[in-house]
Each structure stands twice: as C-alpha cells, then as structure tokens.
Image (cartoon, rainbow, N blue to C red; front, side, top):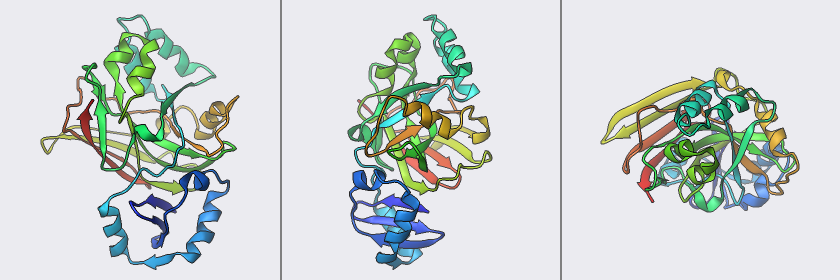
Length: 281
C-alpha cells in the first residue's frame, strides 16, 4: 500500500483502490508498530474515491510524508559512492577513510535533517552559496518504527555540498545539514518485506527543460541490507516516534554542479517519482 500526505487529508492506495481519510497526527501514526495492519483497518472507515479524484488530489500538492521524525543517513554503501568520495577528498588526505568504512563492519551513519529542513514533493531544495560543487543524491529511504523495524520505504533526495565535504571530512555536517538539504516523497510504500534487488533507482536533472544528467542503479549494488543499517542506527539510541533513514547513493554525477532553477527527478520502481526544484541559500 502507498500512503500520501495531502495538503488537507490523507490518501491511501491499497492495490489500486484509493481511500481518502482525514488529516492524521503523523507523529502518532509513524510511532506505531505494525503500521500496515493499522492502516488496512483504518481505511475501512475512509471514503473510497475514483482514480481520477485521487490523481487530482495528488496534483494539487503533497506534503513530505512525515511528522517530526528525524532523518538519518548512511554513507559509502555503494561502491560508486566509495569511489566518488575518495576522488573528492584526495587533496585533503581524507580519501582513505572512505575506503576503510566501505569494508568495515560498522557503517558510516550521520544525522541528516529535522522536519523543518525537509522540502515537500515538488518543493524547493537548496544548494549552499559557499559551495561550488553541489549534487543531489538519490536514495532509497527507510521508514523505521520505534523498535527499529523496517515498516516501509520512500524516496530521498540527499542534497550534498561535495566541495565542502571534499575539503575536509570533518566538514560533513555543513555539507549535509542546512535549510532545504533534503526532500522525501512522494509517498510511503508501507510494507515490511524487503524490496527486490532488481528495484531500480533513476536520477534525471533538467536545466532549461533539457536533460543534462541521467543515471540508474539497482538495489543489487547496495552493500548493506536495510535491516543491518537500522540495527546499527538503533544501537544506544532511541526514536519514540520512529525515524527515516536514507541508505546511500549509487549515482554520483561527476563534472557537474547544480544551479538554481534546475529540476531534479528521482524515480524508484514501486514507489514513484520525487521531483524538486533547486534554489540557493
């Protein structure tokens, strides 16, 4: 099932049948265990609507499918990301750190965003004015319950200032955490089963209505399983209302930097497409 957070109300797609419900307390909702069963039961009290009305509601605009959950992220989980990080940090002497974490037992995990820093689907993500190399990172994003169980999936846009991170790995928080540094959506795919390795992740960037970057990878290239990443995140930590976790990127544009006005499209099969406009801050 796919769960959308509307500007006013909630939309649930269960195998192609759409149910329109009220505005929900998303902190309470995502702070529950067994979310799939809960939503299936709740939908019986909601209004069944046509495909046309559902599509119209989605076109009117969506909010990021979250409440006040924190967003965390994992780094260097794809070989392509390892290679890119080594290249960007070679001058600072930090490249070996990325090679080591790729093969280490403990993954690289870092805080990414609070809800106030997250752009909605169709909304504006930002590049930093003090960085001259900025890229989007398309990532499968996990919905984790308070107990650390994977309850669903969405699409994440992990905006990254590569020039800042490349200058010194200790600058990672500044390269990753700022206003408009992330977006998730367009919906939550609610299911406990892992997505198949054949699941595709696609990135396309348009500038002046022309495609200037495109790339594709699959979850087969993801080195660490989602439940493994969740287990590490929940060590000595707690998330009473659940959290969201980006799982890393396998698509890193080289010799390219975003400009204000660019359009970013990230598509993950089975979930949908997350679209954002690029701004500058």
